[in-house]
Image 1 (tube, rainbow, N blue to C red):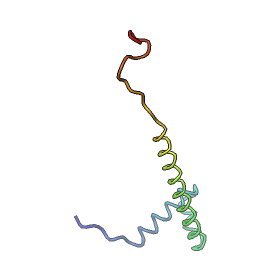
Image 2: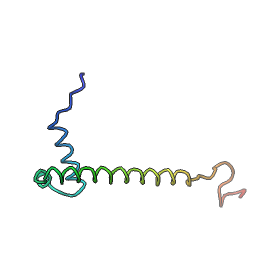
Image 3: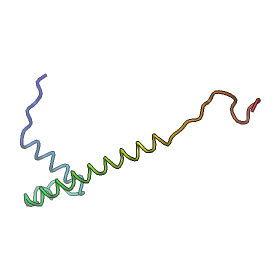
Image 4: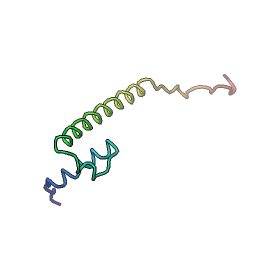
Length: 82
């Protein structure tokens, strides 16, 4: 299978969907924006998503480092031999 060439229309549709989803707008509201407003909205939405991803990674990594599971070797609490 040959990798499809990206089309400008598909890229704009994807960017418009991203902005609409991020800001809770309809696609029509995004298409009605001025090009300047769209560019700024796209940049801010991208930056916000990047920061959110970095924060989620930090939280996940921090949780992984703090999670410890005690060994199950040996008697269990409240069992004979405890």
